[in-house]
Image 1 (cartoon, helix red, strand yellow):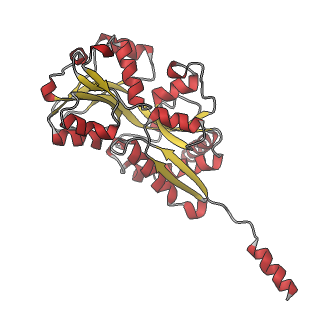
Image 2 (cartoon, rainbow, N blue to C red):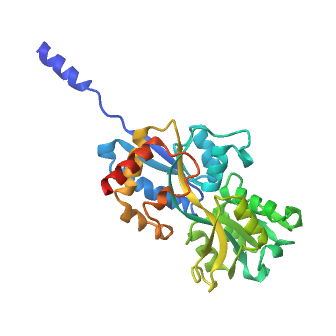
Image 3 (cartoon, one colour):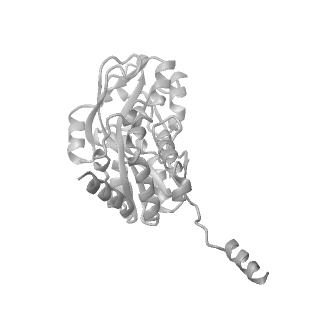
Length: 315
């Protein structure tokens, strides 16, 4: 009996695999970051029984918030604009003298375009028409706030010439436009997005092209930006393409997150890549190769390991 008791006690105290929990910081619920985080977690959680990794998402204020939270180990992963990743990894711009050395890229998922959404009756046809208008710059801690402020500086647009500038969250912008509280808003986002669809369904909108000699100089000065356009007829009432520029939405983490967690997350996405691409229209034209374009920060060793194995397998 004593021997049996010792055996039973030994079984009870056998080491068990502990589940590792990870959280992805996203953005506003009507943007593209939020469903992207959800799509990633859904794939990761399909394998929890075997990998012991469970994923959840958190709605946040966006890129800057996500990077700062990752720096402080409050989030494990985050979706961030590639320009903000570049600035944080290199200690420039808002991160001058505050370089985040442990910031790491995982993959660059899809293009994000700086988009100016306006009420058609506001008669805004170019950046020159912003004077005297009510414009939402972007909520504090968001990538679009940082990108819009940079656009204003490089285009010599003084905020003081606006009637007023606001800092509404992404989810608040369509209602504010509909209720005529603002004339327009800037949004760095993947297309199509429910946010702009909501706006177009409630008010007559015009997407304004962001072009001109100052934009050409901006693109020359900041190589992480690239020219792009929003296709014609993507949104109601906009039959022509809208010219602009953009970045990539990059999934980032830090060096404190385990190699296993990053490897498992990347494997879950790429082993189910065609399924992943169908989860949002913004992923329609991405490829496995494009996931490595525009990382803007060193890649985490867990991600490197999977991509190396995947390339070796393909060859």
